[in-house]
Length: 325
Image 1: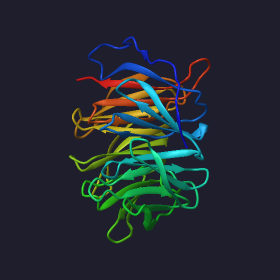
Image 2: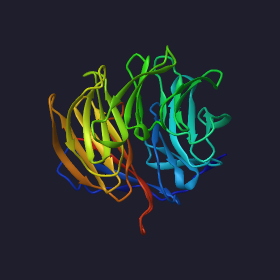
Image 3: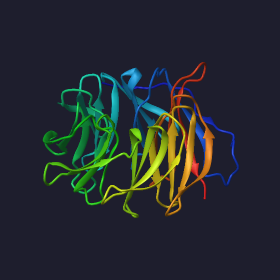
Image 4: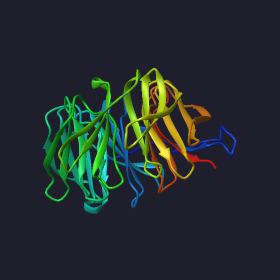
């Protein structure tokens, strides 16, 4: 179900850091009566709409980024975790932890057009820009492959445990997935329909967030135990270098234009860490809000969006940051 939203005005944020800071807070958009945990985000760049998986609320908020308001709210969901927008078919996919279903909405009005029952714990959603296929991590260990035209599952790739964040390679032929329960990072070959490699985490554990630097052929993983950001070679899986970071992270994104990673952490910080080729260097540690551990960096808009859950008298909100030089 889609319902209209009535939410308070956005708050223009007084700059709390210097104008040359790596992230400058521009605005806070309140999400209304949203309680509990907020999970992942996705964007429709053409319409400038941000989709917010409001897991604790069983809803997805649709935020108008041009006017800084909540446009509408999608209801009838069951602990939505992952969201993904596929532009060629103008379709939004919402993965639900509660019932394991992927619910599908289409067009400007986000009309419900179907669902795919995966079984349990449907989680992260990724869109292959080459084939437009939709990849969803779910269950005790699998990646589901969904055809965007038929809206049906056409493939299932087994893993050794539940996949957390995963990324698709530039050609879409492979995925690299965090599998924390198996203490590994898995490489997946879609043409073969199976896992093709298993890479160790070298004493680190709870590898949840991941981001891919396609230009440099490496991926970056954040571990929660101990709290560490590490770079790996995308071909061999070899660990290249690492650095300590903030705790309870659930998202990391790589800004290729500035060669830096943005790490959002539930302990109440966003860390900005530069990739200097052979090592990391910390650029900034910005105080945010406890539990604000999911985010989205959108290169096309050159903006970083942080999901902040309700706390005390402060409502849940999306904080929008402009990256600095």
